[in-house]
Length: 143
Length: 88
Image (tube, rainbow over all chains, first blue to last red; front, side, top):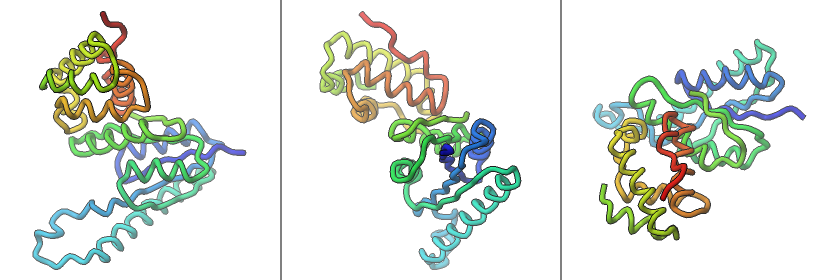
């Protein structure tokens, strides 16, 4: 049976590098691209703008963004003849990634780290660190 | 870094005084390097170190420290020098 490689994705460069690494090194595998929607990650200015913020609307926007992102990944990988699955989960990214790996038939996790800018460097690196600590399956960190 | 608080916290992991001192020394080196705060965005305090080490599945202070440094090295890179190879 083909390996199932879980690759957490967002629209950052390290995530894109992780996807590239996974497809280059496991071209016969099924790649599961997982996007985690963090409900606490509100758009900047959401509350300060003076407009009543509708939680359902935010969530809908986040879901729409996630679906578009994953559709783009699916297209790119399918074009290269790679077997791809996509999934959306909600929650704190590091926990959601580990839980997904635990509850699904995942053989490996390939995750990006080390963003170029300050904020994403801290955020992605910290998510990768937690996944390394808690993952039930081997993890490759792409830096 | 509050050395006293760190040593007290490390003792709860069951190591002897020598092992605790080795970890405390490396923790101070890591704090002084400024690397952790730059990577993780969190100041390296005695309490923070003890909480991270408590997350390790098992082992005494040195094994727990090396487990944590290993996860930092994988995630961020550049932490191998803070690993404890030998002490005493």
